[in-house]
Length: 567
Image 1 (tube, rainbow, N blue to C red):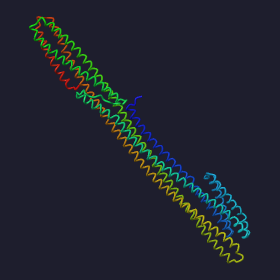
Image 2: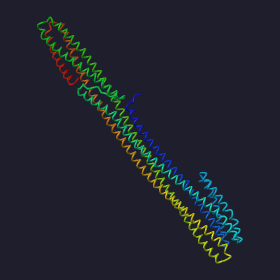
Image 3: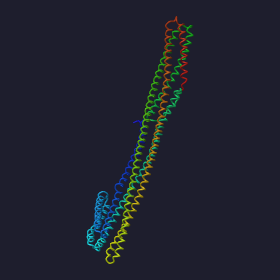
């Protein structure tokens, strides 16, 4: 299969378009991975941390309500605290079920959650007995039961802290994975974009050289041929395409034209010599009438021979004209291939515009991801506010325990039970404050990581913009390719014009030979008429002399025309 000009240009464009498709595909895949990581942070890790913080707050509320029931003397308020405590327990159970069904993803997390639920149930198990002892004013028993439940409470809070740390680590891993995906995607896009641009420029340069160099050689040779220089050397063009066929046809035409001019020159000299001989014979007819017929017959024979030779020359020029037509056809085929290359360059430019639109879509996706991560940061701020409320509750509880200890000291022996309760309340308040501080630190760290993710997303948007500029440069390269193909089209038109001019010159030569043939035939007819009537020989010889003079003039003109060509 021949590797024609159209196939060469098509191959170059297909390679560039293939590389562009790879760039677009990798960009879309990387952005899809980043989007999945962001969705994981928004739908799993942040809601799970918020849910665990709510569970922790509910557990503190339950403990606070139980202590208020022990310390309160107003039965109506005791009922209110007990109702509040039951509501907190119900809410805690609901949130536990929601977390279990929606956010547990692996065995370690399920193990921590199960241990938390077991510790929580052990802690809540003693509540009915504590309330019953309080109703009977048995503060010693109530204090004993509370002191036994405190380890279960601490264990439950510890497991909650581990769950929060686990989910915070998962969020950090998702954020790091998203950033790593962006970095690797950016490197792939930049490298492949540079390769695509270099490949496009290289293919344009190679294809333009493969077409322009042979066309330039053919154009130069055709101009020399049109100016009459038939010493043009053979064109060495090894292309196995339309340009190679054009060079072979041009070489064949040049050889035929050189041979025709050589034969025409020889025959024109022979015609001139014959005309001179004919004139000399006419001058001698008056003294040798008996030789008139013989000389006239010889002249007729010679003229007839020249007519045959000139007809051969005319046929050869006809073949040359056919060769010129073949060259014109080849040039037209080359022009068609160039037009196809122009259309392909336009299609490549349209593909570049489509890639730029795709980069705009990616840029919009990055901006949406930035907004999502900012929203996650705002949720972290809300969690921080909840922790502040818990810290305030712990401070108030500590103050209440201090007041209870003072009142117990005033009561003396009867206030010892209250003193123990007040001590336990202060201890729980201190633990609450420490846990709230730990959660606050975790939320602050999460806010810091979220801010880093926002900065990374904004940097992603900037890199996508740079990728848009790179693809725009590739579009400019396609415009340069289109201009190079246009230049080739102009050179092809020049070759076609030169070949047409050369064909016109050949037609002029054929016309001159036809005139010479006509004159030669007339001379032959005149010579035959001389041999038929001796009494009219003088008059006929005058006509022969005139015809010979005209033939000599035509031969001279033909030699002048042939002298324009360098053989």
